[in-house]
Length: 307
Length: 146
Ligand code: SF4
Image 1 (cartoon, helix red, strand yellow):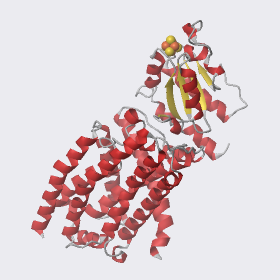
Image 2: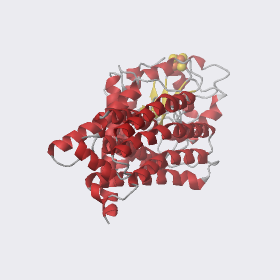
Image 3: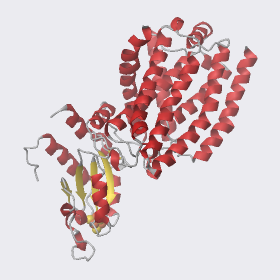
Image 4: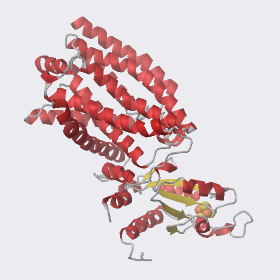
């Protein structure tokens, strides 16, 4: 089957390679913004390899099964979601009806896994982080779905990624319309929160609750979470590119355009992360349910008006 | 040397523990992460959780209150692990050598891999010490030069 073939090569290998590269871009750009030299190119790979070689500790108070299973489920769900994104990007006609909804659900699972793993670890700081992560999920999910709804409306109410891509191939990319631009703005902010980066990194806050949700993870399990984060750093911007910027196609100038769009999104996320302070979780909730939901609603209304 | 050991030396995450220091050594450690010294060039990162750490940086004259806690922190560190003693206090208890409160120097409590002298050591000295540690782990037969 098409999906099985793509799962290993595209879903895992290519996504992991691009994701690790993206996290290097993120760290290097951060360093340059702070007038530092920054880590070498292979640094994210070294980090993962080193964690694989380290001892894996399981705390006495932990509930073993969820503690061990959470990173694995998270990693697999990112693999599946990036496979689906690759397939719909490369073969827009062969995707199934409703894959937008499946993708939105699968993009939620990594955050849920972090929550489950943190609660299972039995550490008070981890459960503090996990409860913040739940509030974070509650706050960004509504504007995120509204923002994706804009693209669905513009593609004549089709819930297939293939149709969204086909519409953009005909009528130009969604992001250049007013509603699409607003929706992209909202979606970028939601991406920032989904990746739990500053200003929405309250669940992890190294300086405050010392890595919060990940505090008890070590060795291989931490490596899986790190890899999951890096792969999400590929999957989420890729999803935005497919939905709002017309996808990445394989030939010549189009490929350059896609790569530039991707690197641009990663750079934008990094710059946001480096120029903002950490928000308290209440402020995050107010930010997403107030201005962001409002903007997303306006975008939906504009899209409805145009249709 | 296997690829995992190689990766280990390329990405040391440090955890910083003050066992009764005067806070001067701790400030110098933080200096290593500033733009001027930028220790992230060598893949080192400050981490907040001991479970993520590869290197334990200890500052201060280990006092009675800290000894059991120091041991617990050390035991929670996943293998392979390294310990770096920073500052005169951690090396030999410095000015506190005759204190009633500092019964043992650090290396009588936990094994230490590198000693970085100074009161406080300069950030350059800390970086040089860590790099010597890496070099020595790469070629265990070479004695580190003075
Ligand atoms: S070595 Fe000197 S600077 Fe460092 S903690 Fe001791 S007294 Fe303070």
